[in-house]
Image (cartoon, rainbow, N blue to C red; front, side):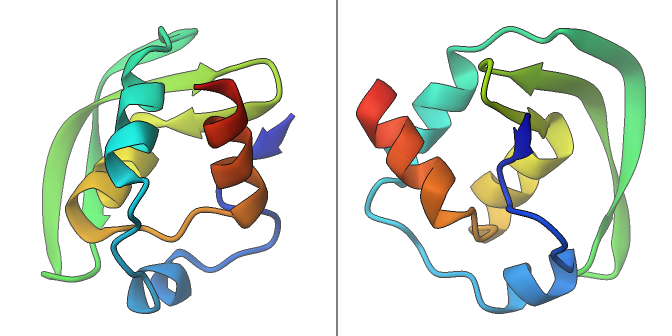
Length: 95
């Protein structure tokens, strides 16, 4: 199973180069339409844009081909975290 960001990426780099996607709403809906396959009480996410810690409920998700965490969804929703082009095409084909 592949991560939605691609392989061997640095999260600071992909936030720094993020842009708002015209497909953002569709991608967020795709995330919301999948149920968690593992959940944890909460997780502290270090927000690299504000240099603060944010606590969010943590969970892991997958669609059979890609996997993601609640942390990645938070960073995508709040800061337009750059997703892999392959994953974006996968969402558009399967939405």
